[in-house]
Image (tube, rainbow, N blue to C red):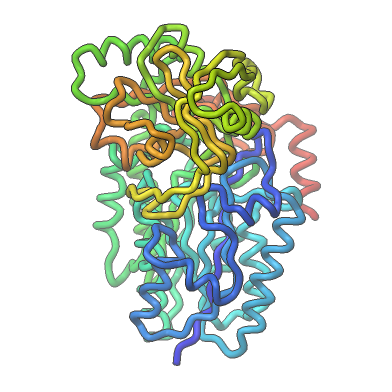
Length: 512
């Protein structure tokens, strides 16, 4: 029987964010399934939208025996701690070694992990796995669409396959695609030629959405380029908040011959570069966005939905800034917003009880410039233990645990307050505290794009607002120090030039 070792280790690192990812963050999962070990991994990875779950389903259909190691994921944040990385990767590699005779390894990784001691978390992970299994066994990897792919990742994996949707509704599908590629490799014994290209400009995440152009059309054309000669082809727009050399968009192709792979990669690169002007759009200030939403709501039959994009916990924000809440109250809007991460305020609401009024210093505790706790007296409308299922297309039926949570009201503005962080990407994240999202005039979601999978069908109009937060909508405003020289820090923007000090530091770092 074909035996495949499998595992997962996912983190999207915003090196400018306020809070690092500890081992405990991976234990909890923060919107992902909680950390699981050994055979428990196969019990959890069932009928959910996760790459490893899709691979497990396809592998079992192929009659393969799976040897699970570990699955660990955490909400995006600043760097992964050295302790967390070493413990998780060591368990993964030890599990692969202990598996005995195997035919291949499949890993579900993100592709944009930066740790306290490695800029390229996935490159280091794959190097250790490759060292453990030798050069002869196939090593296949599914990646997030936001992967910042490095030459080291390309070197050590036989195939990297990235998601093609943002919102990521195809995570499990990408795991299945890895199983198809692996089946082809095991059948033919053939390794693919590799082509890898890094693009010359950063793409802000708000304009990476695959529901819209130009990204929608790029992926349609990319899919049409796949063939027997080029069995897999990926475009990763990248996660533009990781300050290291390999941050940014990339294309990677796997072909029957090097010429096949190179030709396909070059076609996709030319296509993406031809759309540089299109990776841009209108972003409103908090007051502009709220006032426009209020005007649109007068004649709308469905909610106007605003993305509070810069405090997206799916991009490293702490999900606790108060700029959009203040704008809603200031403009006397009728609205709901969430989820504000504030365990202390949630606890105070639970202590006070439903129907009570409670004066809080809500949110604003992550030290974001221009933000502060919002002192206000709220009515406690509903309480929850934070446990519910998120059935929408993004979370795909995951069990959620937001910890003690509350619906607080000030005026006609309702606020979801939780004790854990996860981006508001499912309608259930309002309903679990008694807010019916379809009945609201305005919804303000702490998310950038993932919310669209579940909210576009109920939305009259979508707007993007930029209140203070850890993930600037304009990538040119970030204080970059370590990008590769010459990359444009936004579409048609200025090119990055390292200072002499930082250039020398980067060279010293590379030497080690």
